[in-house]
Length: 472
Ligand code: C2E
Ligand code: SIN
Ligand code: SIN
Ligand code: FE
Ligand code: FE
Image (cartoon, rainbow, N blue to C red; front, side):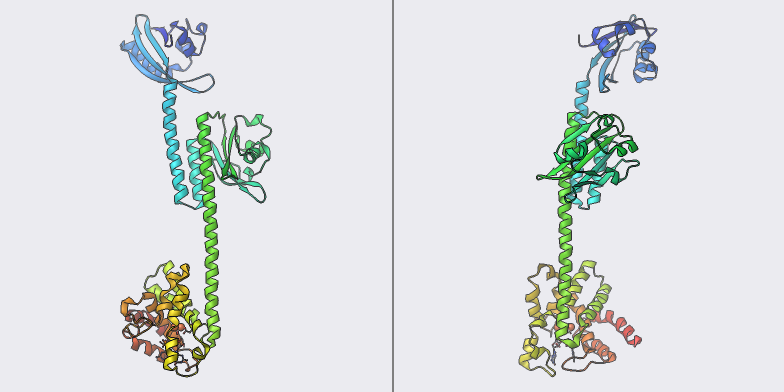
């Protein structure tokens, strides 16, 4: 008979137990027959099970319940209990439903873990900030796997150090206490041999080398899985527990899946930070190039020294009044620095001519925005900065060059820049004329508002120029 059967009298004394009930009771028949339940199981009166039995004793109505219990090995089991009134007192029929119950629990756990994995995936793909990803993953592992502490060790390929880059649940230990040499101790060997290891009792495992860590934290059990991606060892995922941990196959399987996800995350993060670094280096290289070009141009056209820098600063000041975003300002800045890059294609004979240009020379000089366009449009990174080099000689009334654009059809950065450029050009000596006074330059720009210049830009420029005039 698979079903347990026991009879308990009105005084809670065991009268009868069949063999299955003896197995379920986890005691011998001699320990039970003739004894009360309270004597056999001290504290049972406080349990929900006893409460239900008491009710059946009194009300003489059958009841049914599912009751958890612990196997002698500590594992959790479940009984389905039918409690029925009988002439002697109550009859308790018990059936071990642990398998069914555990299967259900497992499905539920797996769902939770799946959901956690999904969240880890989302963290990996949506957020490349390494610390945020690590934190999110560690929190998930901590919760779902019921570990007291978890840590990620990343391998430094040069020194072969496994260095902790994230942890959760440690009370006293620092990240440095977690670090390990590749191949050293049982954990270092697991990383080296790309294995997963579980140690249920660290006290009996002398090959686990981080003794201070174990003692400081009171860890009893350990589990470690190597992080491997495309044949490269990246590190170690570690779990610690302050009481005995006996992971089953499911649990270890999930731990390994998490370790795999982790390895993917690390590869992503590395690739991304490499990309970011490369990008940053590229940006810096480009900006150095840009500044270098502008300088070279100023050296050649030696009387315009510092012009590029000055008009750039003034353009940025004006653009702020038009609420430019940071990235728009970056492009404006680059465009302004490069505004006359096209003059590189203009012969000295023309560029440095002390007097007025002939019609033929002027035709060539007017090519410089087109030359700039040809130069810069092939550089992906500078495309968004093209407006100024290409359009800074367009005029509000459509009489400018190279395309004769009018009013708002002229890109705004170019309209802003044109005011800054002429303001600075007029006040500087040129091979073809001496510099103008600030007052004359200011009067000229005001006069040209609505013909050469965008009147809104001149309006924003005025207070700036007034300030400059006062300083003198
Ligand atoms: P730039 O000398 O840097 O002048 C930039 C812009 O400032 C000019 O664009 C113009 O709008 C304004 N500007 C500069 N000087 C004067 C001026 O004396 N009077 C007035 N009303 N506006 C002035 P623009 O006219 O399209 O000229 C473009 C570039 O062509 C100049 O750059 C300069 O490199 C060259 N250029 C223009 N006119 C002459 C010239 O008579 N002789 C020579 N050698 N080069 C000239
Ligand atoms: C230069 O930027 O060096 C050329 C002069 C000018 O833009 O006015
Ligand atoms: C020029 O572009 O050739 C003169 C200076 C300027 O307007 O940028
Ligand atoms: Fe120009
Ligand atoms: Fe200029």
